Image (cartoon, rainbow over all chains, first blue to last red; front, side, top):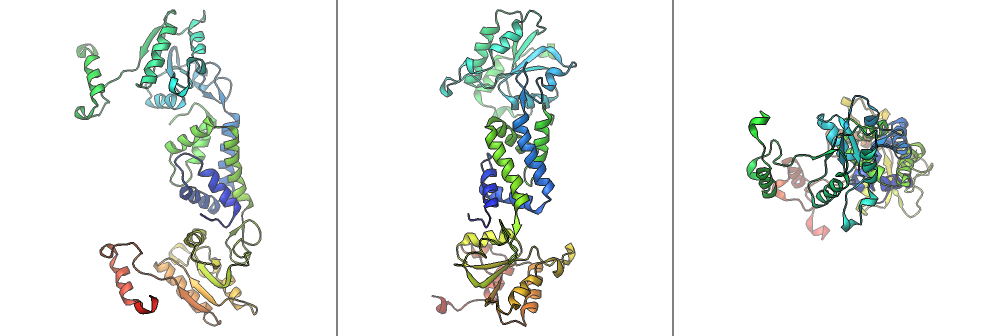
Length: 205
Length: 205
């Protein structure tokens, strides 16, 4: 594609570097920005620039934060006896959006994956152990909310071993047939697992 | 959706103002930017900011330009006896991408549409007439490349009347069944028109 302006060409190039945005979409966005006020572009450019430059990571849970502590760790109304261990930020957002969890988090920043060269030392595992091991720790339960994949299971196993010496309950999120899902379309591993790990119906109802 | 950081919230809000980008996509883009180097975000923000602030319009054809004259008007190898009249920038880009046209342009900046309150005075029509009327004008043909809609036809009719007193040929882009299109799926108006405006096959081959 040829552009009559280097400014447009450059903007299209930069925008189309974003995942899932091709040159045609980028051009559509550029034309939208050109049609609108300078203030619209400035506000967008400014928010992008500030985002990356000013973002910080919570010193305690390694979640993303605007200061040294994230809004979740700083919130006295959260149940800080609970820690939910997740792989990365999108998982925190997904769990927060359920509206079902009021504890704290610990963001590992990845998952143990020998194929990708990610070992335990690359992740925030030591800091998790330190949080649990602290003499004045109020943590009672660590919930492992890792993806049900081989890497997730490896990481969960490693964490369980590391946390075993300390006086905390270790739990993992439930796996089974998704709510609203049709039984006949569930894959056989999920369905088989959901039978093996069946729960006592009477106790729950 | 709740975000643990106001920076993220703000960036998601700004990005999701773009057409065709919702909050989920915006968040995906934000997470991508956070994962990458500061330089990536800076480069993107900078190109967006410069785009809108530094863009200019060609004094002659009102196409978008980096200076007072666009690269097409400034190019001595283009056939400046030809002017292609279009509604807006995307049309210039579409025609340029065909690689079939080597003349100049005139960008109206819109189309006559009484319903939207756009009259001839809002558009670059007077400047087109002036270009054609200039005593030293080298323009021989004005090609009307407007959309085949009622507004496009109204604008074409108005332009034809305005340009009639001057010694220029006025033509319009061909309408008919799109190349590669199936005859049976062409709409009846296009198909009917393509029969009425049939061309002499022998002369063209």
